[in-house]
Length: 476
Image 1 (cartoon, rainbow, N blue to C red):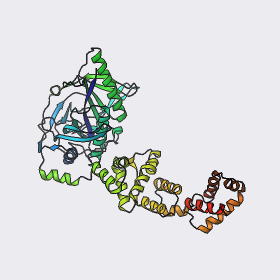
Image 2 (tube, one colour; image 1 turned 90 degrees about the vertical axis):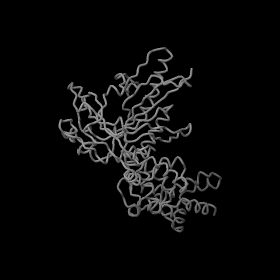
Image 3 (cartoon, rainbow, N blue to C red; image 1 turned 45 degrees about the vertical axis):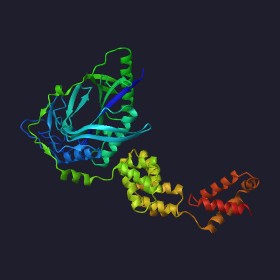
Image 4 (cartoon, rainbow, N blue to C red; image 1 turned 120 degrees about the vertical axis):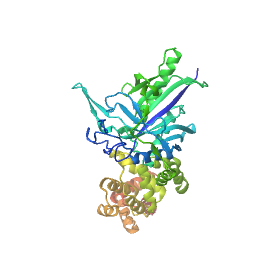
């Protein structure tokens, strides 16, 4: 029997605002425990929340880049549930009138292109964080994350494979980062996904029993969780075992999911309109201001790289995957760098240096002007490619000035025919056996002589000139 997996996602994204959603506490995930807490976000009675305008604008931007309708009137609601890391015993969110609805994201996989529908995007506050001390047998609560602003992006159940899920998350992350909505670093918990999954017979229109896997924050774990949960559902169907609608966690050590609780429905949360927060009214002028502030989006940028610079699709996609890397590339090209050469150096040397330093592409710091100078020296033949790599490493590691570094380390390419010819004459005289071997038809002997020359010139000789002069001298 053939089966089909049906998946929907709820993606939580922490917004890149300076302060929290309903108070003026700093939005700083790196702060010490309970450093950024006030009576309002700690749930003390008698203090009224005030909506942060920047949060609304980030949510509008999220809606615009995901082709959503921006609702002109939206409201906040209280969602009641009781966990020790939720100091109010309720969460302020949006149920009845969310800020964005009916959007979509276009994805590409090996199977082709596909449109993933977005049901809604809503604003809400985050809960705190529990810290467990197993040795002391106690749990502590860090309230810094209480009232940190989030958008939750709820997809339609349009996914049919893990590959589609990953493609969607990658696309969504790129869109939101470019738009300045959030940093979306999954490893830091700034973007996390809940996976709603069910399995049905292929061709059946009725959805199967749904389970939700909570708080997934890595692509690798998401792929494993989907594979595991799909197999678990199929086994249960084939062996006629009961499946229950429930929330499950993911054990990254055992690579298996585990039951947490039966899945709640909206009625279980006792939603009701928040009486302390007035409706947010959004007019066309506000939406257009946010739209006008959006930068070039990754799809448009990739298409431009391919059309204007003849950069291959794969390389263009790699460049635009990081807003930081794309910005360095754009600046270098604007200052005169040859686009394909700049792209090649950024995707090879720059990313290699960043990886060695334990940095991501978004953390990479590189002065575009210094890259332009380096590439000009290489293009004009004043620097060999091996030496250019040495200079690039110095630029990355020490923020070195390329021309000064080249002079200080004697990396200038020797292009004087007479000087090179004199050196090659000495090398030929010192290696009569290699000369005899070459003249006897052993071409590898030329490589040996070439290597001797490059060693003497410390990599600063023009390889093309050296081979040309070697052939001339050996032919005499």
